[in-house]
Image (cartoon, rainbow, N blue to C red; front, side):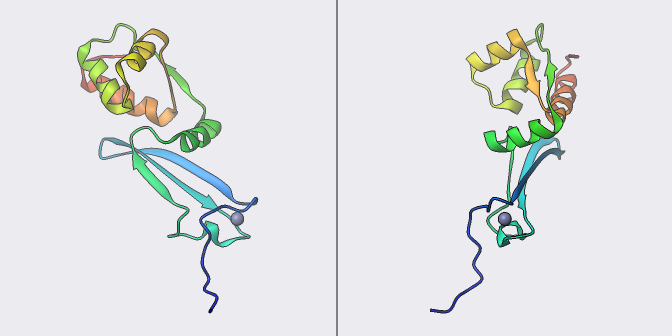
Length: 126
Ligand SMILES: [Zn+2]
């Protein structure tokens, strides 16, 4: 059987995980990729890239938080329109929303910027 230069869908120990967030067309977007000089996993356009909208998966968010940290967004006193924005952007259940109203939300800088803009749009100033 010929040996193709296949790329295993798993990082080697030297692979470095990069993840970031941005706002694109008014939506929260996340992207991630692996970078490596020793294995093929870090090559572009293979299984190592991922992206999506909304709040990122745990591993992506951890990587973003590790690099950028979080800010505490206080939303106590927010009215219905602002709460709907929070629910829509963060995909929260009602109990989670109640916890955010009580304790604030640990947002990444990009999330905080996007949420602040969206909350302003809903007529509320954090
Ligand atoms: Zn590697």
